[in-house]
Amino acid sequence: MPRRLDPREVREDFPIFSDPKWRDLIYLDNAATTQKPRHVIEAIADYYSRRNANVHRGVYELSVEATELYERARRKVAEFIKARSWREIVFTRGTTESINLVAYSWALRNLKRGDKVVLTEMEHHSNIVPWQTVCGLTGASLSYIPVNEEGYLDLSELDKCLKGAKLFAFTYASNVLGTINPVGELVKAAREHGAVTVIDAAQYVPHAPVDVAGIGCDFLAFSGHKMCGPMGIGVLYGRSELLEEMEPFQGGGEMIREVRLDGSSWNEVPWKFEAGTPNVEGAVGLAAAIDYLSEFGMDQIRSHELRLTERALELMAGVPKIGLVGPENPKDRCGLISFTLADVHPHDLAEFLDAKFRIAVRAGHHCAMPLHTKLGLTATTRASFYVYNHEGEVEVLARALREALTYFMVS
Ligand code: 7TS
Image (cartoon, rainbow, N blue to C red; front, top):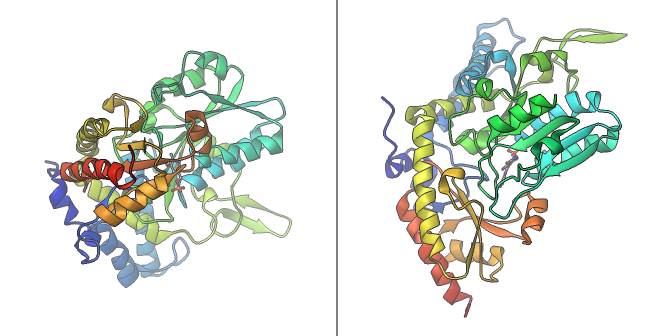
């Protein structure tokens, strides 16, 4: 039986919320990073207190134990996203590094002048810039699936857009619009055109069940720190066949089988892609985070966030002069809402919410400048939810926004 998700009880699992300074904090910046439960913090402390050694090299018991912890974490991740094998899981520093790995190890070596890379207009910079760099180096061209007025991808010309594409990279869920994209349909279309697919799942894996084998994508990236895990650890899922044929991303220790003065050969997948001493603490913390989220089950987490999003959209829609961004239907969104309020600058609004109501939200372009340009905005304010947020907090947010109108003398 999964543990019942009562957000007020969940909050007690997170030491930061019992710190006297932050007890009344309404933390609504979960799309940037989440807070960490005791379970994760203790797993990391335990690793350094009782298990710390370098991995894959020692023959002594402590190193063998550390290696087991690291590799067990990999198996847990594989199970969590339903990969066919743990060999398809590469540990990285985060989503950004995972995407760069594909850009440099796959795209740089497989693209040539005249080839086509397709992205969407709703991408985070980390799913734009690496492709711009690789296209610049190879002479491949870059095009974008447009976003429509309602905040969805305009798929009316999907087939035309994908014609001749070698690679199609897109986000599972937008960190600004909240839109959840129909990834199954996108992968299917890409496969029909023979394009390799890369999914940026930074805003989805933490919030709902994911089945990479079912989706059929070639690559999928996410970060540990957005799902209760520590910073500096992330995952690249890669389909075995592709990982096998790819060249390494970085060179150094760990990723080699043999080094001679006249050349080297590579270790097996996935270690071929993990040069140097890995982030063992990060992997251990990520495994603890998966255990923690699995207590509730990802279906329950999704339902909880959907309820909160529905309530927030309903309350926020009633605030005068608010401009809500993204799909109207909460079911098509992950648990985040970006908005504008009259002509109040998002940074001023975020400061007001923090100073007067202890509400932490993000303000700015959220590393999605092209999307903001498309929306005709320079910045938005964003509230994003997780397991410890409850309806009472959403109600305070809506009230605070009304008060902001008075404070900033919006007539
Ligand atoms: N892709 C998406 C969709 C994201 O939202 C983010 C981080 C990244 C990639 C990069 O993840 P990283 O862990 O490698 O940094 N997004 C945000 C955000 O929305 N606010 O702060 C970070």
